[in-house]
Length: 226
Image (cartoon, rainbow, N blue to C red):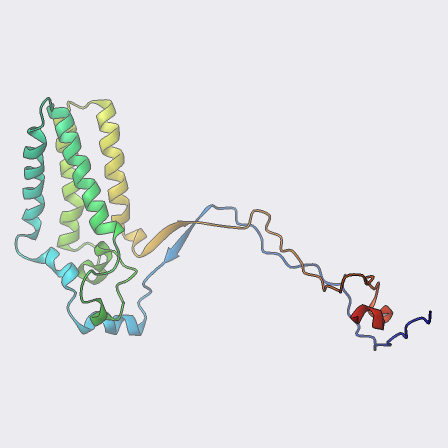
């Protein structure tokens, strides 16, 4: 059998071992903070095109009083449960109000109606970040910041300063007050999903089955292409 004719290829000057494989360094943190709604010119124009009725109601007449009314109604409803004590009743009122407040002001993003009028400029913003166009220390935001603290103090007093109920109430209060801080305005804390190994797997060129892998480019013959 005749030896297959060798194909001579010009030297390409490829040094495989010259440069090490680049890999991305592993992050030492499991959480990251992202900035949302960075106020570009287009977004500013879209937000100012029409009034944001999703957030303007906070400054309407009676908007502040409705919180107190709902708290009182919730307290009366919970007190009608048979066997309910004042300690548990005030704790439930506090927890229900804080949970609804967090869900409404800090969890849901965007606006539920007429979103097309603003070109999606509010899609990444919570209701708290939409109030007063994102301004801090406004009267409405001060009221919404003080009210949970006042309700917490009332629940702490009527629970006779029970240490277990105090721990539950103050934990819920902290979770609601943290998103209201100016330092976390338009910031999101997310978990980092990183590659466990942090090393990329290099790919090698494949050859047809039955053909031996050449040791260099100069040893490639016609048999490797059959």
